Image (cartoon, one colour):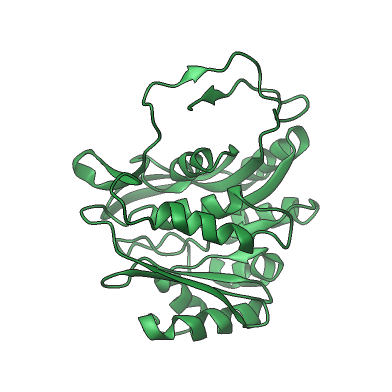
Length: 287
């Protein structure tokens, strides 16, 4: 059995609602095997960020490099890169790899805390965004990239997505999870043409903490080559903007969005699932 492999390059969220922990769960829900490269360790919970410790950039780069050497990585998702040196370190490794990259420009947490140093934004725009297979900003991040002090409104999402797509020459999935009322997401092609838009009722009593991470990871898990990442938007949005309570649950009093996979007790499959050479692993089978 061949399992698609993706890699997330992101920060670690101790609450497991966002960051690479959310990416792992999202990838699994979409049927992919997820590798990780840790960029930062973050002390956070829904609504608050208490501390950020970045990983040495050389170690970040080596995590990315060893994963690419040992596994057939089909797509990469970048999340929290935090500093200019980490952005450069990641870019130098990915520049030599023929693999599509879904860039989730993690800059500002749902609670409003900065997750990227201001001096890193220009480096980010110069090195990562022009080569992205898909860019997935939320409203706060779109405002930063558009040099606007005001987030785009519901009716302004198609124009905002088009402007970003043309500026960076890549498809853009503008995530409207922070809108009041129903969620709206807009997909623009690199030429600014509208490729799709989705509006769904908001799931009540679930924090938005980590939902953007989950959505971009789900899209990366469904990438089919450089031109196929945009096609992963529809199944990703269906899974993580789904209005039915059975699609998302709550992780205790913290209110994190939690991906529900049933049954709760996984078992080892009877045979190894081959995902690469020499990186063959046993995969937990959740029917």
